[in-house]
Image 1 (cartoon, one colour):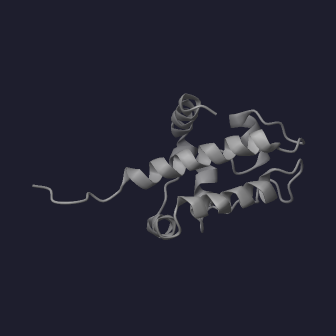
Image 2 (cartoon, rainbow, N blue to C red):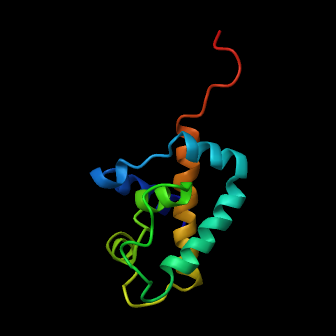
Image 3 (spheres, rainbow, N blue to C red):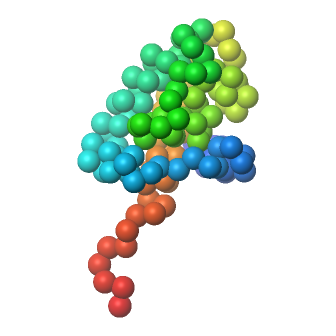
Length: 129
């Protein structure tokens, strides 16, 4: 996915009332700051491979919690939480396993959302005056 495609997709997702309501809370921001983006994206790769990539994931539609990890929140915000959302928003058909390129697409959109979210409310550094 090119940066332009990712930005366009994120803009479309922000127009959804449901998707736009997801934001990182203080605990998830702390977790992301302490663990770092690389570590959190390693977790994301594992979650995507285990819970989203199979053609018929166990508990599809219920496999992604609504809280507890920055990636879970990002998955709901980016419509990468289940195969139905992937089909609707990203065009990946249910019943077909996600290949490496599809998984890379999911990870790229998750990273873009997490990066935007972690910068959005970042505290101002230095003096104000």
